[in-house]
Image (cartoon, rainbow over all chains, first blue to last red; front, side, top):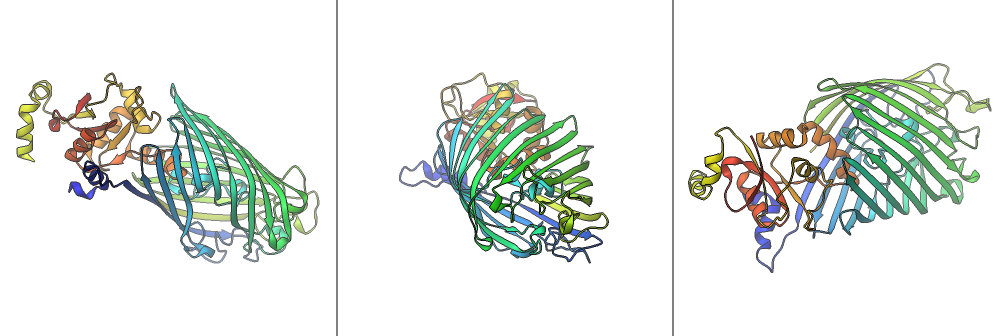
Length: 369
Length: 142
């Protein structure tokens, strides 16, 4: 019975100097979703298409995620972490090593991750696919669709300290990566068209300060981008964001504001955008109803093809078990007007001008193991 | 199991005389741990990953019992004031981002004792009845 546990086995073997076995820990998460989109006008190539179908409930979308993490502490200071993930929809559950890094912990406060890891661009970016960890069915897409970078290959220096019930974190990271994003619906390709892009020479910063009830964070990330399909080379893109989480006496609040700024030549594929959301919820026993207001609009350099949409969503998270939750959400989107008018007006995250509001309905099941 | 308890009865007579019959949770540590004044708050911080080492520099290594163990539920409630759900939520944000590592999970009191007795810096919790001299006691939760 004891032998089942690898760490004890390792300990027993470790007592014999010549043999030692590092402890290996396996954990993971699974999110499964059904989505249904409802819009007057769509060619079914919108951002919402890989997420939802407008004819029927869609069970095979990129809302489906499974991840397995394998962790091994080699010494007190050195560990190795591997994350294998698979996504539904277009990716068709192709398993990829979304993160794979070695960590060297210099001391209690400073650690360095080396290898492939998920960048902390926005507040929940680095655990974006762990549905169990947050209240919504998915992180509000007005904000989270603006940064399609899945992983970075490079270095991540982290400082973490806890002092008198306040937790501090400061992180510097950088590296390169090859990623694929769904095309901007206004680019005329259809928003489910995958665009390959490469990031490099990047540097990011993430800082947060918080207690058990309130956490505030700020982050900034700048990178060079190549988009071969669009003949874009060495253009700069940056992502800045502020975030707040409150979890106090069953009142739950999540809110973020972000700005994406891109060089002129990059703006065709990835225009400047400003976006925000505010989620307010109340936890009553195992149930957490919430409302989210979200908005995405043109950024600092307004261009015609920037996305514009505001939305309101009503949702409910129900913790059915201590490691599983079911969530429901009804979201109504209102594509925004553009001062430029023309064909780009009132498209939002859909793909053709919306004459009326568009709705997205979602049910998810999230678990961790 | 029964002979084991009989064997430890003699060795831990002091504890048993002082203890109450109801299931109590004993928080234990490696015998070499110097810092004896470990408060509830400090134990909580070790289990949350906020404190990573003792004052003398030894890395603190928290050990958990398996999910569903009533000892685990009692420990989390008394020391951390959290339910299993709240702890799952806490770690699901940190585990996959490389910002924290949950305690090692071990099956049963005997395994906890063995690991704690042989790992400098280890901290664990067991049923008060399983106490013996192989480990040092920090706290008893009644």
